[in-house]
Length: 167
Image (cartoon, rainbow, N blue to C red; front, side, top):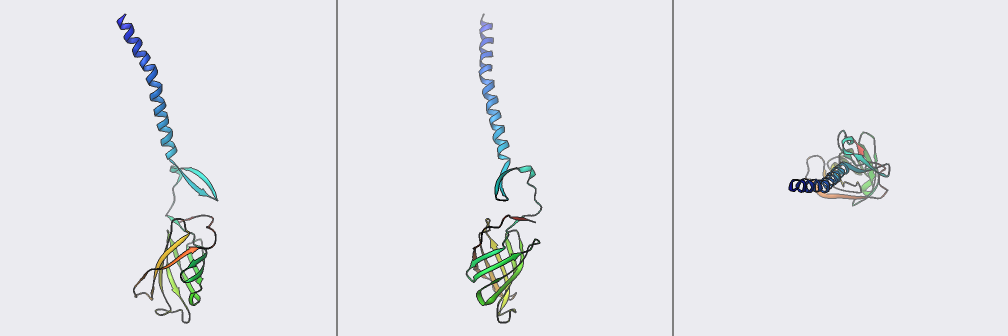
């Protein structure tokens, strides 16, 4: 009789514990699967994409095309699919050209009257924020002058670009 009680108690214990353990395990697996999805904004809509399908060649780049309010006046930029950027800004009828790689624009600036280095032109580097709404950067006269750190900043005037580009 004692053996029967022991077997009965053991069976009852297993009948109560096993479903709880399975439920916990299933819940943990579901959480792990859910964590393997990342939410992306694609074409203006939020989508859950499985992590294993997120294989990009290169890194995300900011699409900097549009109008910007900067400390050197309003700037208008156009961006080609290959990352080449050209533009103008109001201070001294300025021009800017270069390329964007990742979130960093590197190029040249030039202004009237000569549009030539070292007095009216030089190098520029702009770092865009992760949301592509602002930038800050530096510039210098010619190619050998000292960098004017944190001396060029801007905020997007026009709406956000339709998408981030991937290189």
